[in-house]
Image (cartoon, rainbow, N blue to C red; front, side, top):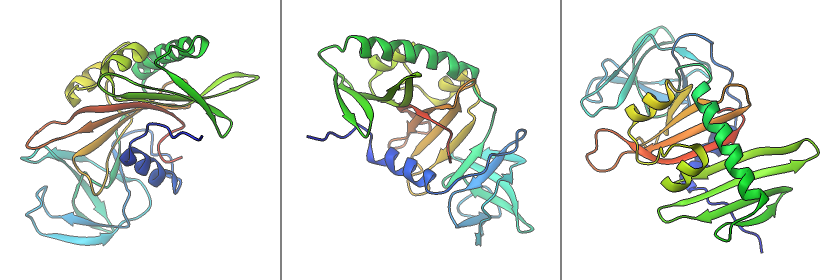
Length: 246
């Protein structure tokens, strides 16, 4: 019987949407925004109550000379599009922020050691199955789930995907428990993300992407805001092959 990996529908939808078209590499320096929607509202001020105009967005990186937070702690990006200067809300935007992450590379090294132990001698709480030429390992922890997917060949083990929402597994695999952390805490540990993204229709979710220095892998930290929270906390951590938008 064919099993399915433990990937939430929201995350899978974002991955599929991002992979539906190739996003060009951003400029190496500065802060840049890539619109993920064909049309977006350009506001006169960083305030949803200010006057706005719906404009067609170019499929290219747009310079962001400044960014501010509003009273609800949501980000706004100052841009100039088609000769018009205004503010874009964070949702529906992929923001290029920093370079590849050396801190994420340290976590990735620990991850490879941990998943090798599971592969060498699979504990009873883990199960595995083959899917499309790859092997998927998965488990259900006390406070969440975890899975990783690898391809084994002559050149060794190729990592495809890792995902967990369980703080114990996160600590076991990455050497640090990121689940439940606030964004300032994450950035204090890992530094500036390479990219950040807020899905257009779900602004309560936010992705921080750390492209891993020295490899073609990306660490993804998913934050979620609930109720009247002014700061999201980490809900899920992933590592996937390639970069956002490949």
